[in-house]
Image (cartoon, one colour):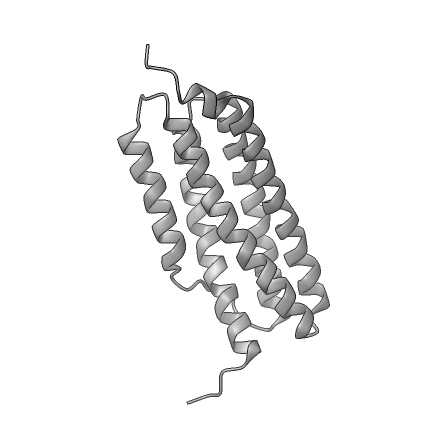
Length: 166
């Protein structure tokens, strides 16, 4: 059996986040359609466009390490997205729907932030300077999206979730 090194772990984790990003890309339109708040809907649509760019950057990182861009099932993102689906089903047409969608989206963002932060650090240790820059660009986008979602929550979504349905 081949020895497992940081190179191996980097590649495995890259495959994990590649799978996750592709799953997220598929779920964002559904979340945008479910959102009641125009601001939240717009945030999901904006992040869909960003996610397409993030997938392209991941493909570039695969190229840098000389590997084909292939995903590996990510149980964590499967679970987080399943929770989002459950919220959409259980809270449909209810005031708390957007707050639940926003919380589910932030769970996704936090997962991505941890993955990209780790990959960036490993790429640095491995001397993959071009990969560091690509991963950092995505890390900054994910962090900004998380901040934007917090702003939407604080501005109205969480308060609106307390209202009773009309």
